[in-house]
Length: 470
Ligand SMILES: Cc1cc2nc3c(=O)[nH]c(=O)nc-3n(C[C@H](O)[C@H](O)[C@H](O)COP(=O)(O)OP(=O)(O)OC[C@H]3O[C@@H](n4cnc5c(N)ncnc54)[C@H](O)[C@@H]3O)c2cc1C
Image (spheres, rainbow, N blue to C red):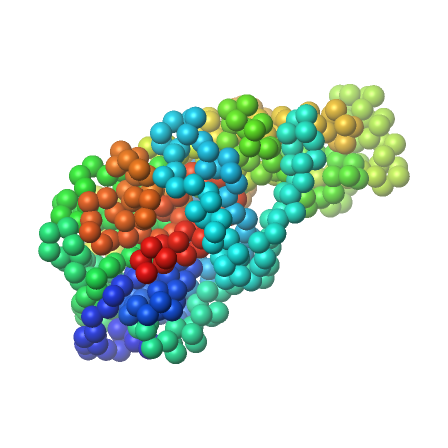
């Protein structure tokens, strides 16, 4: 059933097994999965079926630190969430992403990657792709792999699952339902309050509550509830909002690559090589440049390195080399200071403080891109496959460029999972530490981010949570 709180004077008084807050990728999949197991589910979504300014402006907030997207631009606040404009690119975590404990306790996942791999096939089918990845070790000495990213037509979760949700006897979808508060006994949440845009409040009772409001809102709402209720529903001093991560996306320089490296391919270092070099995960890509880029780069090379320049010119004459932009999307180190916080002065229309995103790309992050590029370049040099020229900022000579892609709109961490309350907000089952029945779904529970797009792995974790709650 589908209800629009803007049109109701009273919510139907059903008691639910589970109340899922947020109908994006995680919330929709979780609600349907639980309904399939006979649970009565309330799926409460802040927006309507389409974009509205009144909902979207609740995402306003401030970015402090390095340049980042405006917080009301980097996500969408209506049924289907940010999948209404995501790119659909997907790839699961890699073994090394779950094996970073050698870098410190803040890198330790409380579960193994196998716990996610069990759900890879099902999660892949949700986003209309398969689970086979054509990764190839292209150079053993340097530890370089060529990897595959799936780029199917992006699934719009709202559109794909709307009819199924409407027809489900076990899911009630509440649109225009903005979470404003929770109530309960002891550390058990028994009800949540939702406000419509007509300023009416509705209460939903359930045995279990799951926050699936996205990679910034999950932190924001928990921080706000802690301000209101202290430690009633969560342990003291949890690092809520902390260790927030993105995937920096930048052009690192230009490349001349010969035929075996065709443009559009993705490269990275093997896990073993990353470990050896004490660096994080970084995906590299060469993208063909149009126009006279090849000629210009060959000419430049002739000036600085005539021998190599002649090699390049000879290949260019036979159309066996091309000028490319050399790009990277990479893993950001989880650091305490990168965080979602609450504004001290600005609130949304429901009285919830706006988000303040503190985001800085550190020297460790810059070094990740530089190290991967250096290894890749060395491989090209050794095998006479091409040459890379990195921009000066990559070597620390200046700021990150502000006119580039900057990041992937991948909001990770903030309510991360951990075996320890020091480094985590939720436990290995995604339950908030100190709560009886409050859970979190989405990439905010990620401990590390790898370099791959987050939606496929967050779906794997959501399917795992559905099993747990069943
Ligand atoms: C431009 C762009 C491109 C992207 N491309 C890719 C890509 O190619 N590959 C990839 O893997 N990822 C991509 N992403 C990221 C991807 O969209 C997210 O990983 C995914 O949508 C997260 O799903 P979610 O369910 O956790 O959160 P969301 O999709 O953000 O859903 C959260 C839901 O909660 C609702 N909500 C928020 N606050 C409240 C509240 N107070 N009360 C009730 N409901 C609330 C929202 O309205 C929303 O519907 C992209 C994102 C953007 C913006």
